[in-house]
Amino acid sequence: MLIKKRRGWELPERTATPEATFLNRRQLAKGLAAGSILLAGGSLFAGRSNAATEVDPTADLYPVKLNGKYEIDRMLTEPKYALTYNNYYEFGTHKGIAQLAQKLEIRPWTVLIDGMVEKEQMVDVDTLIRAMPLEERLYRHRCVEAWSMTVPWSGFPLAALVDYAKPLSGAKFIRMETVVQEETMPGLRSSWYPWPYVEGLTMAEATNELAFIATGLYGAPIAKQNGAPLRLVTPWKYGFKSIKSLVRFTFTDQRPVGFWEEIQGSEYGFWANVNPEVSHPRWSQAHETVLGTNEKVPTLLFNGYGDYVADLYKGMENERLYM
Image 1 (cartoon, rainbow, N blue to C red):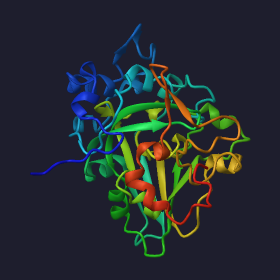
Image 2 (cartoon, one colour; image 1 turned 180 degrees about the vertical axis):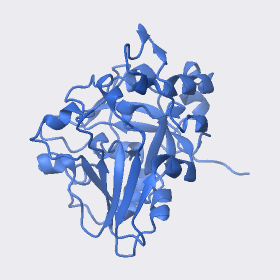
Image 3 (cartoon, rainbow, N blue to C red; image 1 turned 120 degrees about the horizontal axis):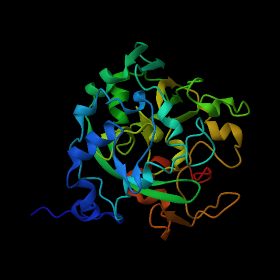
Image 4 (cartoon, rainbow, N blue to C red; image 1 turned 45 degrees about the vertical axis):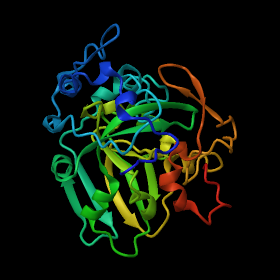
């Protein structure tokens, strides 16, 4: 008889998923894809342009099948919170950038795969998405600002993209870049920031089973404010590592310097692993506030995913893993 031993954060998926969110996932997916989903108080974004309400070319793929392996211990965050409380500095330094982000042009969209690979290539994003093994995963998300949410990402393992890219044996890191659209992103006028937004992972981190490229959210193509059309998701790290609107994957033997690391390396470093025992220089990381409920709960090392990732950092006890 096979007996499954649950990890510390796990809860059966049937218990974790709010009934109202997934009773009619196909209808929800269509509404999100067309930009017409209704939230409390009316439409999510009133008066948007026609371009913002166009149906995503990959909308027919969603919702995708849930991978039940990645279970959670909290209720899913309601869409009205996750879709309207967003960090995306290219559109502004406040959380209410969702409406501004509708100006982001996500088609046509190409992705450059270059550096230490067998063959550099420029790939159409729809071709790439349709070539990947799509699935849905329920993941907890922990921001370095000490708030958290739990959402259903759709997408594919980053390891699948690594296989697609065919890196050379000497590649040790993946450097990733966010799109630069001067005509749609008012935040780019803040010239003191080191645009484009850059982040990176070691190859071991990138090929860990948790590392994920999100193409969808709540059973629909991912919303622009959440990082459309491709967004990195690394649930054991602070959210600033989860770079949005990806246009480039560079395989390299040099450790990348991320956007926030370049701005303030003493506060935001390469590893950015969630660690409640080590405070940010300006606030504690011991607790987090759950988006939508305002419940304050204890933070877990590696955001509760230590069984999957702790081995990646053995022998690195002197590294500042929280950074």
